[in-house]
Image 1 (cartoon, rainbow, N blue to C red):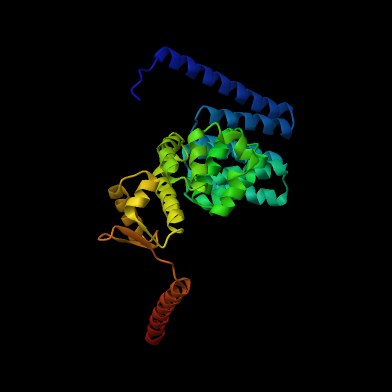
Image 2 (tube, rainbow, N blue to C red):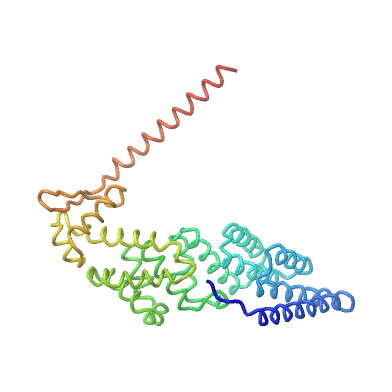
Length: 331
């Protein structure tokens, strides 16, 4: 960021780090020579956590945690060490490492594990799914963690509520949104700390579309300030607009473009460009009559869609059979 480096302070911090690392090494050696496996494990774990704290290389951290795991028998202690590694992987943005560690946790939980660690894993996995843009599964995990949240080492409860509301807004239908989010006591106690998010949620459910678009820019700023949601802010803004347009159009067979724009508090030109982009991508089942200035909804034909999907899969299968037949003839 272009900040000047205080060399004396940097040297002091480096000396303190080296001093503490030496003390931890001495503690490990003492435990190995004079104490038992439990004390060795605790000393190795303390060093591994310190390496995470100072931002040591992945190789050094992994090596230390692996040494500690070899001395660990209890499933609970093994899970705690994996959670420590998960935190570092999450903040480093290493999604592959996150996935591998989560799978490792699941295997250990099959052998045993208390409810608190199982609930912790739901939050960690939810963050991983959100980071990989699987908002639907992330929403399910966050919803199941709202009443039993204990993962304060990762983020505070208010942040969990933020993630829960953001992921559910674009993944739940209106009925389930009210049941699981809008009327959820745990969410109601905290969402007031984020007025723009509360307004966005309630305006979407109560169909107050002008208020919805009024709150959307502030929620977008909230998302951009979050390290996990920031990479997905454009995706969220597109998906939430698709949700709100679909919800509005479900109530009409046709509606004038000007009336719809007035309801949303935007210009007709802006709304026209918005709807065109969603229609072309197949996200909205409607068409625009530019001459009459009307938006007409098209009721999806589920039977015809299913028929077309079967035909497409059948053609694909026939092509594969023909290719296989060619190979067999050649042999």
